[in-house]
Image (cartoon, rainbow, N blue to C red; front, side, top):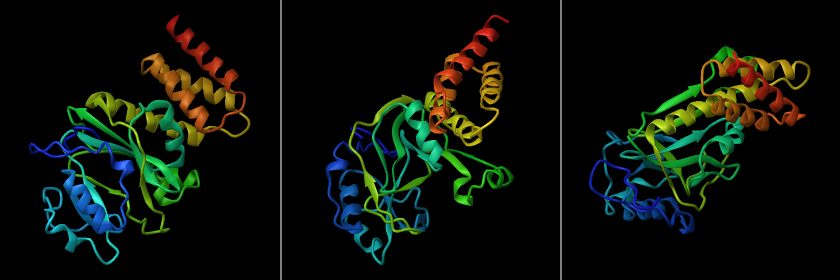
Length: 262
């Protein structure tokens, strides 16, 4: 994250070398983040617990005492930087077709679940999740009901070298430059990821796959720009590993053409 600003003050921290930094333990990592000009907060599992952690900036001198006893480290988001958190496996498959390339992070078992962006204006945090009834019908566990989150000011996210509290999976960074993007555009793209993920989860494995494609194209084509519809449906079909992909996408485009012709 080169020349980004995660906070409301004048500091301009640089994260361009995060993927190359080797963190031996959480305390060392927290100190390194602070030196980069980032705001960190200790976590119990994935939860921040210090009073007023959203606006509390730990100094290099005081940070070591907060990161012990198996605590994790979280980066406090704010200013013009935030991330897209892909909670559902289908959302991870969809995101690569919709979100623009940028620096990513995640866990060893889900390595590219966090897409980092700088945007102006800063978008509001937003979570897209299934209802409990829908999640149960799809056979998803409670943690799988959340599809995608847009995290911004007032939120934090767990980062390396933290360890996931449930399965011991280690958090990791990946290389690459952080993408600058308009805040409203990022909000729209996250909505598209949520829509494509929902379609991927419902895509029939057998039977009425052609009808599903046609109905989805017809409905979306009446409510949004057709190029956007094509991207959403192609992402959903790819994530769902749809058979006869060219045939399904041809049917989609034919439906959109008929809509344009009235």
